[in-house]
Image (cartoon, rainbow over all chains, first blue to last red; front, side):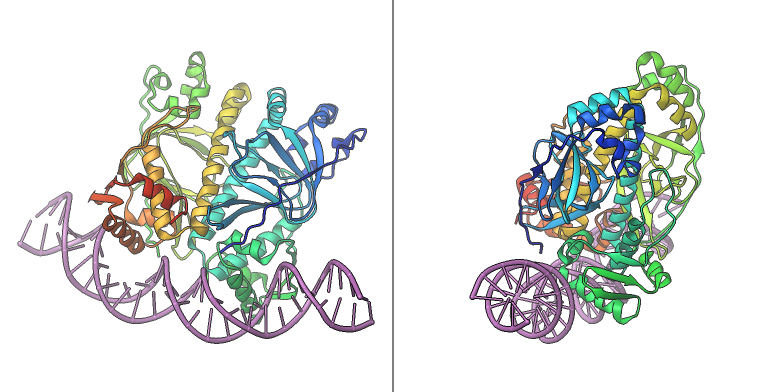
Length: 252
Length: 252
DNA sequence: CGTGCTTTTGAAAATCATCAAGTATAGTGG
DNA sequence: CCACTATACTTGATGATTTTCAAAAGCACG
């Protein structure tokens, strides 16, 4: 069963640089790339950048959904909770990830930084107004939502039908793929062989629908089988990609 | 473990009525409601309605994604498979449901009718072209995708963290809510107390990440506890909504 | 009234969870 | 620099929910 610790506070840093969006590292990886350079001023006027320190939550499940968010750097975990504390992490949001899409007036999930983050906040009404003028932005949002839907279906397959070993293999490979960044619209190419895990074992367990003990045991077993190495708890070396691949896809 | 039976054929019925979209029962419940009456001719010229009989599949996972689909009547199951036959049903698509949203060039899931269906097929390039001219349609698609994303997160919580009893209670209540139709944009109000289950126990199991035996056992147990009645296998009476509700939300 | 299907029920087995220690690791203050 | 503490991670023993294997009971259909 999951542990729970809520720390809702957030640090707002309104440093008004000359043209922040133009120099944003995350733009090529985010929906903001749908906005032409000449229109960036308007985007920048809506964007409220702020920092979140590790462990701090910046979206509370059930709160009124007044903002959209765009992750500039760092990683967040997105999760849903049951009243008794059981938690399901529905995804990790990294650089370029867009958060807060919802028709409902309240957030359907919570979000908490797993490492220090920088985030751009947008007021929902203002960004909605901007959507009217920039159909390309709406198109990009639809693309992003479609991609997330595909990922969600993949995760349902994992949670509903895969074994613990298969879940870990799938997770590690997905992390390896996600670690090499590719701008929006570009197909993914390379796969890292060293995976960095900024999240705790508890987070991994809550993401894979397992317990922290099962995650730990499964990793040591994969290590014993020479499929991976675990030089430090937060760092995993993929030694046998082929074996991990067939494990992840349900063979073996 | 899931059984598998593929029957890819589909019956195309190109009956060209005078103004089919205007008289479509599904329009108020679907993205098509974003198109004004005066533009319906154009929509109708793109729509290829066809019938699918129960048990027939009309989307094959991995096939080139050449079409979008809009469900006019009946119910489909959407699923992903593992090579050894394990199956996860990611959702059921009823009247008004839009299918095929994907950036990828291939379908990420399969779809099969669980009862006789009528479906409108749209060629992807043609519908994309129409999106250019009707931003309201794109907006509606984004809304639909957002709603599905919320549902997917809810399902991840179910698959990753809920017990068999909780899963069944959640499923039955969701069915009860989904049975009373409400047009797009309207909040849901009523909840039926008799649930019709057009899908088999195997489908329910593959949707809830359980086995057919566990589904059956759990239903008989809920019956023994007077929470439900099962007059016939395809029909379930919800006798104690309050108890089911608290079960579904993880209390008890 | 068989035949073939889905569903239900039963007994045994297994994976994963729970309970409980023990081991690192990082940060703190003397 | 070295205890000392807090936290995260690992490992072990036990247990429980769910799966697997097996068979019986309903139900539709020819």
